[in-house]
Length: 304
Image (tube, rainbow, N blue to C red; front, top):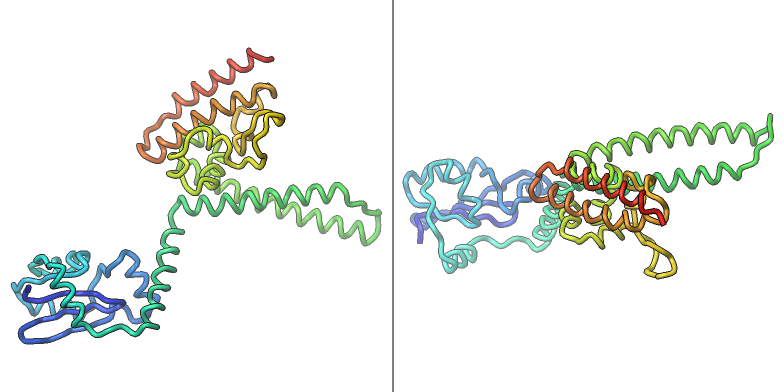
């Protein structure tokens, strides 16, 4: 066995010295929430002061660590890191004081919450969340507009006063939606520049949100992308089927009876763009736009 063992369990770090037998234990943070944030990566990346002082007192003695991520901060202190066999890990962990079951469960929950918070901070997750909220607000605005068209007011009456207040609310609501829509478009252009150029930033954001991320979208094929957001069941009697791609850039430039063909072509280009954004980050914007615009002109000449 190595001269000393550095182990972690729960929110504690242990340094075990076999000769003379001594166990040094210290928490990586004072409270459970702070410990969970530091444990999100699987092991603490910084060692408590008591453990740091104990490692420095070892001098050139070899030090084994488990999990291996503890080796980084330990080696920065000048420790000579050596390997540890599975049997030695098992025996060393059996020698550690056990954790209270309740404390262990609470720490696991705190680590899960910290990991979720960290994941939600990524630009892609923010794009997914904000896009879903923008789409919800757009539906709500549409309902408000339809309701306003059916509302009948009488001049110089409480109904007229209510209609005026309601109109002010709708203007504020529209301004809030417009600001959110701008933020969504900006994030989409940052995360998926090729896809945003081909289908439009708003449609790119909705495709990414519907797929659950840029990489899941890139892994799919063009047929799946074309149907993302579709709420209709397959049927030969309903004509061409497509989801949010129906509001993509240049769709309005194509005759109604050729939009199904354009959706298929555009979906193929969109998959290529999504794969470039997800994997290579290559700028294919110019080439994809040339192919898209050429397809639009071809379909306009082939009107049924």
